[in-house]
Length: 286
View 1 (tube, rainbow, N blue to C red):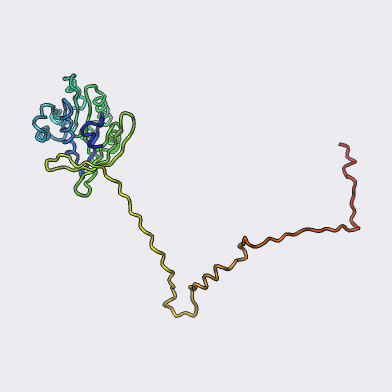
View 2: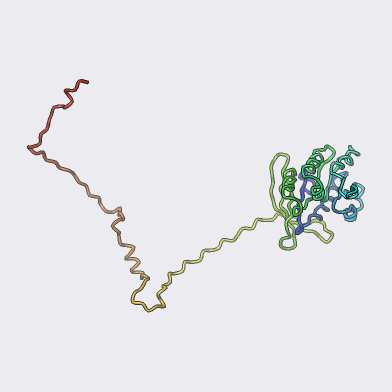
């Protein structure tokens, strides 16, 4: 799934990458920028956390003409607060309406900290629904951003990549939640690695590990707690005593093999018995 998303085989309007200090997503974002430049005619890179040179020095020279970098840290007011917003990216995209663009934001954490979260979500919605934008890819630091804000962004995104700490062998892992336009949702966990130049490689699904079922230990024989004591009686039964005890039928237990007795009541009429053959209700006038 991750490889198909990078190559554009799986369409997604908004891709959200969440990372933390233990698992940095900047190198994955670099690979996404390079992959988007290979399949798109124009890419707008909005830099809030890193300067544009950080990306330009890593990208291949033949791909740089397609890249338009915007430094979001330059536009600040007298108090030092950031004045540039995501909505200004639409103006850059609209300048060349004939060429669809892919928009990449190196970090949404700073815009969320500087402005209310609904404002950032509304600006992202305008970007993703614009006819001039093919895809929006954004990175957010979940260990710095409020959980409520992360939940709103993940609800808005069609694809969410949660980066996990490194697993065995130095490989990285991520949880992927991808929603297709048909409404079908895919959830998977995949691993990947980086080479010396931080290019992604060895993308493969992570198999779910199942706990090995422990074989039950054989029941140990009952130990005699009085074995070490010199007593005149014993608490344990021998095998013959256990067998004899099992054959004893207790009085309150019913045995299906026993025959049930039947009884009858015999009554002989006495001469002194007075039988009134008349109906006592004949004199009633009903």
